[in-house]
Image 1 (cartoon, rainbow, N blue to C red):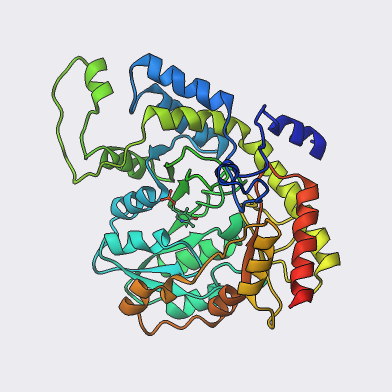
Image 2: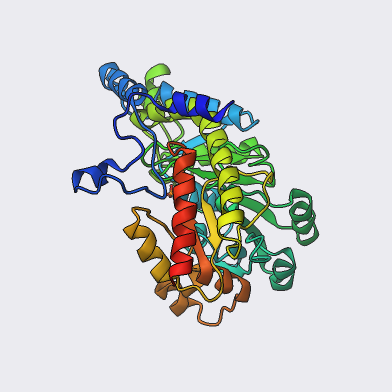
Amino acid sequence: MADAEITTLLKTGRKGQFYSRAGADNGETSMLLVAEPILGSAEKTALCDVIDSGWITMGDRVRSFERMFASVHGTDDAVAVNSCTAALHLILEALGIGRADEVLVPSLTFVATLNCVLYVGATPIFVDVASLDTPLMSIEDAEARVTPKTRAIILMHYAGYLPADEDWRSFAERHNLVIIEDAAHAVGVQGVGRYGDATAFSFYGNKNMTTAEGGMVLARDPKVLSQIRQMRGHGMTLDMRQRLKGRTPHYDVTMLGFNYRMDELRAAIGLVQLERLAIWNAKRKSLTDIYRQRLASLCPDVLVPFRAGAVTANHIMPVILPPDANRDEVVALLMQAGIQTAIHYSPVHRLSYYAKAFPDVRLPVTEAYAARELSLPLHPAMVSAQVDRVAAALADALTTL
Ligand SMILES: *Cc1c(COP(=O)(O)O)cnc(C)c1O
């Protein structure tokens, strides 16, 4: 699909869609945001339909959303939950990871990736990333940190880029580990969910598709998936809908459960968003390709991780600033030019809570990467002229300093 065509498709009658509506309210009409959801009349109609239906949680829309999400990702079934964090927690519970176990995790991630390990009482073992150019977990470093207690590894598909699957599968087999994917960045990309035992997705407001809050689980073993389904709703054998359909008031609880349910309103938004995901991801790819070209010519000292043409959902646009650049000043200059940026991520092991709990962690590549990383605006409502503007503003900021 041509860029212009996609842009036209994206123009669903929304006024000032390229800029933050929040920003417009406080007078900053031209702030280009790092991430922005696309929501419009289709979502509004879907929400009204749910309200008119009188059935507002855990009904047919949640079930349809699960089935459609599974089919988009080439699997038979999925379980919808109320966040990716809940999805990860349920996965670890269902796979029986607990107190005696160690789990390999990245530090270049959002804290939820390893909080779920702490929830089940297991020990996270931080693993470094491979290089500034490929900031995904290093298989050599993972190899060095495996112990007889290691039970699982959580791969996080940073920026939406998938790692070499054969390598990780044979690593997991060699050490008898389960593979869990934190695919919060990788919704809709070919091959996601096929690395190992279970996968968690996020539909938070800044992800490639959103339900405001929400998440999804895929699992290879149908027994694990059905256990997760039951655990999501307090461990009950029959939910409200099933009791109505089965004309029975009775249910049993056969496991310790949680309330991690998704509601019909969110599922209705999710169904609309899922239909557009492929178009939005294509737009993200074309914007990323333009970024790569513009940055190569305007800012040759800026490193753009990964390769054009790699398998990715293009969730964010990370760049590595030159070693001598003052990142805070670059951020301030871009902000003055009306461009918001972000940092993905402050390494988790450096955040106070975790630094206190795990004081001896040293991850030189993660630390070097995180010290120089800056994420530029990338979302499907952007147009190529805005990419040009960001690249030019970044070049300006770097020469000013
Ligand atoms: C957003 C995100 C999460 C958490 O998702 P929620 O749906 O907000 O719980 C987890 N991991 C990564 C890598 C994320 O980016």
